[in-house]
Length: 78
Image (cartoon, rainbow, N blue to C red; front, side, top):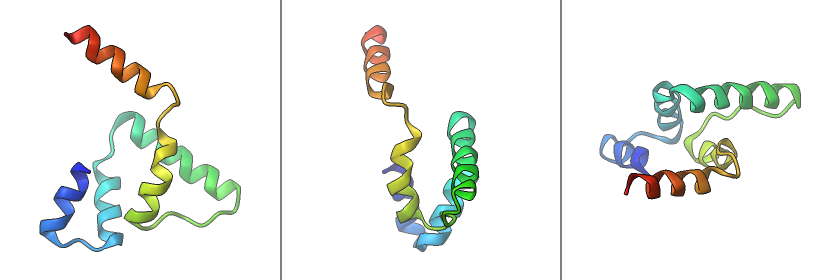
């Protein structure tokens, strides 16, 4: 959602939005994306080239325990 706030005033199209997102990735997200690219190539699936497609696939980047871990971090900060 934060990225979409950046895209809207700049009037980025779907492909440019995707490229911007890839450039801004760091750490775990960047490694996960590289892994995703390799897996898709191995499985002979097409490359992801648009923001709308990336958003759909992006849900797979987070481990299933992510929400629970985030909740515990928030609680521990209080």
